[in-house]
Length: 111
Image (cartoon, rainbow, N blue to C red):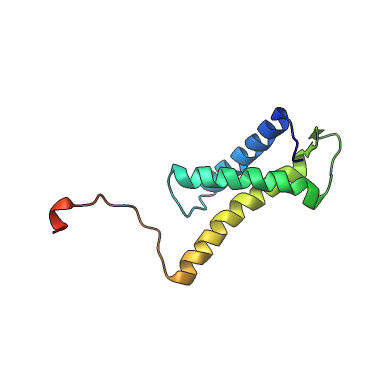
């Protein structure tokens, strides 16, 4: 899987996109609420899909392309996207932090 072709990369990218969109927008499970949270889930979904076939196994030979088995890769993409958000939420709870929106810095109160 390390020496994958461009088409396999794009398949994993689409599977990561699907998992990130479902978890971020449809289910609404978020830590970072903006586009940065979505992109982080997308990257974690790609990594999860990439690791999933060697870890989960090679299922459903008719539904594969190259070395990418679609069903395990999709499961791995969802697990990767979910675990990223869950770990950040757990860390924020453990340290007593809350997700807040950034406010612009007021220069008049600086001095």
